[in-house]
Length: 265
Image (cartoon, rainbow, N blue to C red):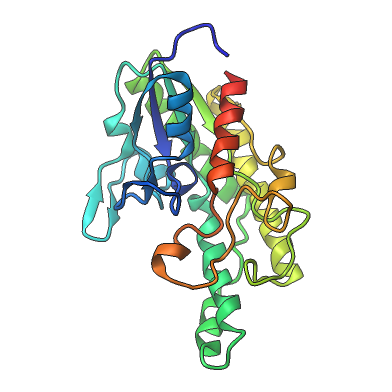
């Protein structure tokens, strides 16, 4: 643990930091849990927390563009950063590449395709397939994440800044199932896309000089289908409230991320 006291933490990011589907809910409009990793970390360190995370955020909505969610608009997250923050955590960039959103879409498509009544909807949802970002797309996402770091340093000059990566979703044990209705080729495509998201963090850390808490390799044996998954699969009943948390960290996953950050500190 760091010798310098951490009295105030701020958290920026998308759903992988916000924690949709994990009770209790801290902010329903932001799809933000009161037991996400920023809350768990602040509790462990005895620090005050400013949690600015919003599910669906991109690097742009964190830095410059207001984020519209239903009837509410969130200002760019950095606008809420406290100047006296000692530590700022950042988890974002996956939405810039369409990572988890496409997994939810294709998961619902796979489930719909298994029934004659909903098969036409499944066919429509499957048309786009898994995103295939180019190297230029990865570079742009990394540049966006590096801008988040730069803007964080501008507003909270004395804060230690940590980039916190995404947990593995499709791991070596993930197979076609009700919770993960993907064929082998689609699973491989999502593994590739997960690697690209991890590369975004590596590149952003190199570009910005921020510290990196890399979670992909650390969580490799805890993907869907493993004995102890740190993420959720597609729920049995497809309701908007439950689907929002699909393919996201569960309580154990958030605890593992908080543990990794504490170990890093």
